[in-house]
Image (cartoon, rainbow, N blue to C red; front, side, top):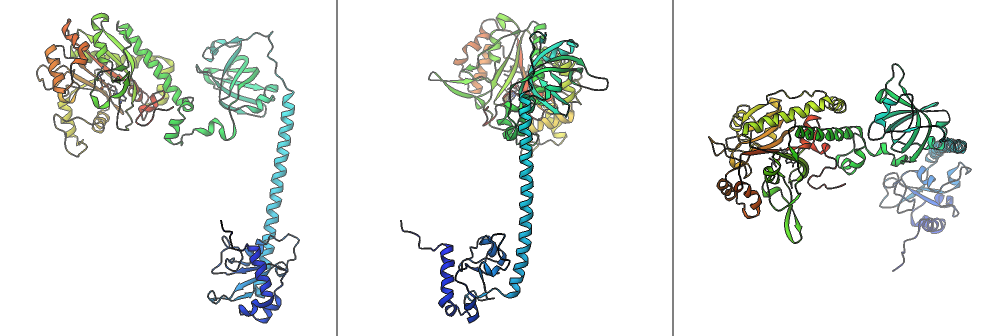
Length: 605
Ligand code: 4AD
């Protein structure tokens, strides 16, 4: 590669200086005085107030500075330099309006005077900055020294876990019953407040929280200096009731006499508190779902979720409805092909289940009424706040019932489960905190025929997405459904949907066979939380339904057989657990109600 022929700045300066000392004066039209004044041992710096630049200029003739001060600073003069700038460099200023003629003259006496003044100001501020830097460095060093000493001293303070002193290992939920007992607990530091003589640490172990108080040597150990939130700790001490007028979780606190860090969480830039805040972007929150789940709101939602599933199970159990666990890998669709997740099953196509309904129907003859709580999968192509790709589907199937029985059962179950949750102190407290306006739904639920809903939408100016009025036969889209539900502001059982809008298996309505014995339960703020129906009982009607929907009947032989071997009236429903929770806990989106939510484009963590 050819070497650069471009001279360096120093070479340029040198060159120009020597030329100036000999012939440059004539070449550049310098007067004799300028020529005489130029000293060949000093660098020459070019300044052009208009065409030069202090940020990009180098001081060379072809790249002048804009101001004499920057030119002066560029040679990095020592603080001891002669205050006369001409003793360290030659400052050439381009004559006004002479860019084309390129006429340079030495800096004028008045400009030089101004330069001397600004050098003075600059030196002063430099000195000030240096002094400030010095002070800060000294302070930092002193702090480090102090910290080092503290750590040295802390190393010599060892708390002893005295084996001769008894302690009862316990989970935190049990400590309110253990006042006066010496207990041993383990958990995560939820938050802590170090004070001069006390540390207040709130520890969480997944069952409850406990305020722990550390004093004396307990706050002087290395562990006390290293403590960070989300570290795991073990603490031993005596449970005491909180003092009059003070509050703490469970009304008790732990007076710690021995403790240690089990696993230290990072501090500084990696500290837990810095990773998530209310302002954190939604996609980062989703990436950090594993950390978000440690937060109080997410924990509360998950706790109610567990209690909700238990309440449903209790209510089913009470009614002698048996739990079954159908498969998730299937080869038939339930709710239409457009939301099926397909995968390769040993070389044959298979799907993730959309609903366990068909399997539930098959065990009615053996187990009677059945239910399941199973994941369902929908390849939803839209990103709404109530759609997930995987959700927890609570489905029940009841035999020898009529449509009214199905509606009554649904109403009973929903009201009973809400009552159970409001009677449980843990869920009641969480519902009160997250949804203070919540009132249990009053019975009977409003039952609204689909055709009356269409009328309601038209009368209340709730239009379709294309701006037109709804007419009988139209699907009621999510936005319209929610608008109507929010206006009515109480649970609605929307019944008798048109056959063509619903799945193939729904029982036609006796007096109007173009409609079905179907129900959607709509809740304010969420919309549909339950979808259910009576099922076709007659073999021929089912075969005709497959045909109408273009579904090949062969893969459904096991489902069809129900109509062959002792058919009977039956019906059932599916309840979206995350939607039910979103309604109960007033969450903005079902995503908050799933442990690790999946939606279009998101299957991590
Ligand atoms: O109305 P769907 O599609 O009904 C069925 O699947 C029936 N086979 C159920 C049955 O009768 N056994 O779904 C039932 C409920 C909806 O009301 C809704 O609460 C929930 O499942 N759901 C969803 N929840 C979250 N994300 C989705 N993508 C959902 N799709 C349905």
